[in-house]
Image 1: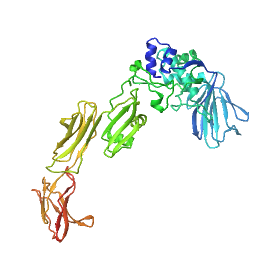
Image 2: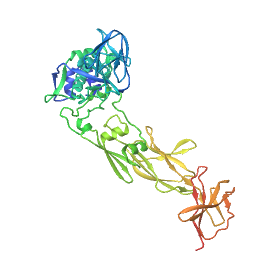
Image 3: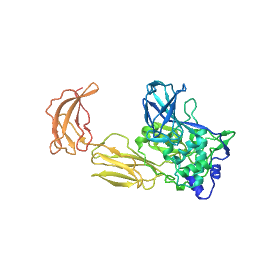
Image 4: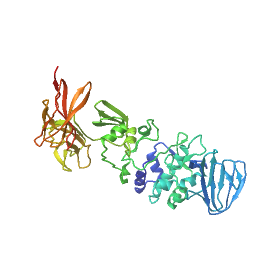
Length: 474
């Protein structure tokens, strides 16, 4: 069930049973027997503190009852109270008309403390209907129409019963692992009225309580179980959600996701394009990342989680910019290869003096363009709504060497020139020189036979420059 969709249906006059029939087709309303819920409030603690504003009592597993005065009871794994060592679990019962408090929050029912001798866990035991009073207002705004709140109460009741944890000393978590449970402090008259008006009602299918998943926003059509979990469920199918438009997240794009994040999330280095294959419902089935070394395919669900998307209802546009080859030698050119797909109004931009300037419009599809930067430059693809990654195009000075002297273009007065000799597979320095005002340099070194070159280290907006190798002697 889409909660914003339920809100819209209720505004249009639909009753809660009609809302539920739309979102969970094939289910029927039935009655659940009175049930006690065990809600895990805390675990893995070395200390726990429970407070009461009135006298209360506790009882341990051996039946020992200890009366307690109003105030705070602090417990450790040894479960020693008033010099008595008690047996786990302890049941703490509030005084009449009061509630016990944990972490400054009041909780209805009783609190159960369990110890394994090293750590403590705290469980709130209370009737299912009281539990729902602390769930529904946390899941749906209480100011929403009563029929929407009733639909939420039935869905929450059904989900709580169908998704109980097995093999534990509790039934549900107090957080999103089950449903968010806030206890008595978040209760509202409107939500409580919805719970009471639908008391005991659950959704059933084939003799079992239905797992009534719900969420805030669908985007216009709900997801089917097969889309999310890979396994079909007869009553969790995709249905139209025309009133979901009330949600601020009904349309949650476009988003600009950096290529580096995409590459990391999908384990696909060097991503140049993304292609979505969609299910019949329109939600992403797979996402294919194109890379120079081949395609990487992940499920839509995996892509959603890895990229931090709100749902699997997404498509992709692409802004990709790359360049083959090494640094550009001064006066030369570089070929940039761009991909623009499903993006409107893109342009190729160059960063000049701290601002971005448009070089040319970027056409749809893949294309290449020749650029001739004078110094190391930054290029990018951009639109009014998103930016592609910046691409650095390094430019190296043009360096010559004749065995005793050489030139550096453009002239880089004061720059260092290093003479190097190839020894085995390693270049070893032999001497240094400084570039003159006119770009020339002189090396006062007599060379024998061997392979030599000169190198100008990266500086002043230029990448490292290398002269052609010079072979002397044999």
